[in-house]
Length: 95
Image (cartoon, rainbow, N blue to C red; front, side):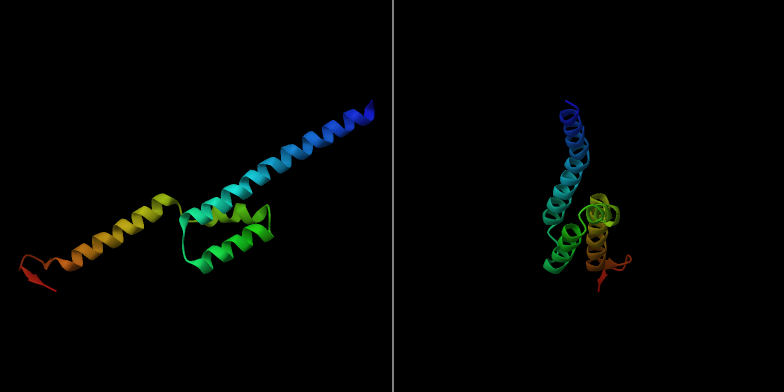
């Protein structure tokens, strides 16, 4: 009887650790692929995530650029591009 209890508790403890780690790993891999950056950057990030199973995904989520920041950066680039195509001041002269 003690063997069955010990095995059950060991399995429950292992599941409480490994299931979140696997979920974190899958979330990191799908997020890297979903953002679709350059091939070399994707490959390097996936190597980090796969080689360092627990620390890799944590580092990825800590250091990645949030989607709001990416959207704001792209909006700023678009705004500057549009401003560069418009007239200079109120003179009606174009660059």
